Image (tube, rainbow, N blue to C red; front, side, top):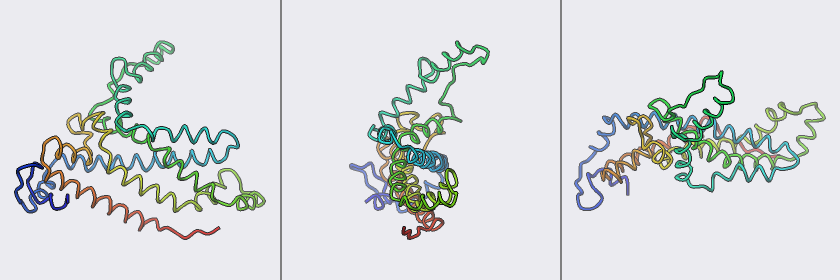
Length: 266
């Protein structure tokens, strides 16, 4: 449906004029879509490195403890059940210059350690806005990948580790040579989910920056929403949605091609 709409100039209600590939020509010439395109890839990088990365590290650490693993599972998974809009609003309050959590902590530290000369900071600027969106986005879904990886680790037969201990392999070497190779397929799945999930992000950015300042935190999902539902340019919004789908499929196929899944039997 979106693919068909992308060939029309339509407001979604009365006006509907066939314009051929004009919406796609406009995509190429639109300076904002170029910024959104680059920012989406930057956000994808943050998500793959930190979201999946921390999920793997935490899963390995929790697998190594004998007591309290259920507590950590609950704590790490909890942010997922909160809506992105609520988390975005919470972090927007954290970033507030006067009375925000981060600046309040800085002022408190400045009283305790005056020689550091800490001062209140404007957290959302043209340079930092995208990172301020990435921070809550990464934090919210670390627990999701933590659960996937931890479940995969739990399926590894214990006798493999016991054999490794007899050969003198333990600690960090055990993780590198046994655990990570045996959960390779699940890690690839995590990367694909993280990449496709990034393309859907828009509510967090909408609440925190609305794409600003000066469109410097604009991302594809948010830009599509603004064009389709705020500017009432459904045809152009549909063209952006087609771009997002093509991008998601292409990157997923590329990841599968580069990191081939293997049949692992224990």
